[in-house]
Length: 282
Image (cartoon, rainbow, N blue to C red; front, side, top):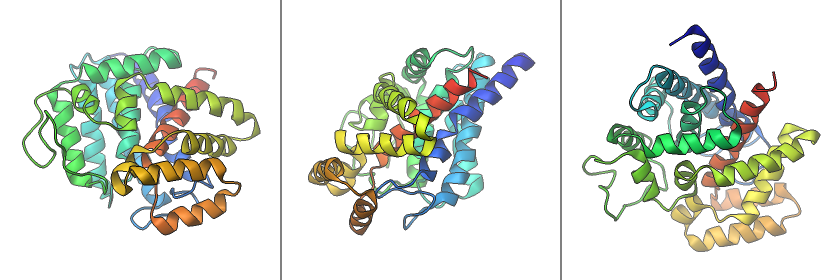
């Protein structure tokens, strides 16, 4: 591994992890953590710590590719897990962010364009070993996401046994926006990044909020569907499409404890893609 590869990995990890803090800073985003509003179990300070954990995982994933490691995804997730434990994060703050951003960093060496980066990231996830799945299961057990329910299917439930297949197969078995993005080339994430690219002329925060508005009205959030029911996800999309005032919608969704977590993961990764793209212009 050369010194230039080390510097490249540092720059790529820094850029790609930016979405993990830019997304929670943006305001207003109904039901979500912003620089103004927190939630009962997390706030913007928790996301600042999570950003550091994501960046550490992203850096290790990129470095392991340069070193020729068998499974850079597992190595990146292991470093994220280590950082989360060291920082004593009190809840599932940004596991979805880490799950989307760390594979992108593992594919970033050599500076591929956005399309190539996303394609290679998914390929690395699909080629990952059972070790990556084991670390992912450990993260789920540690952080205990509120939406985590009983799994019925060909894979062992998080509460029992160890996975014997790679992370790609594990994620592909889950009907979840974040998981499907990671294994299928980040298609929605790339579309959202394009929306943000057009809107960024009027400010980055505006771009994030406008992209959130599009996602909230166009996509049924899978985390909300699991935690509150499919009907809730349908109502949320309808209310977002009709909302003329995000501040009012924010108060309504907070009163119901509604949070579009899967959509926010996509928004975060899209912001990371734009930060990575901007780095290439420097």
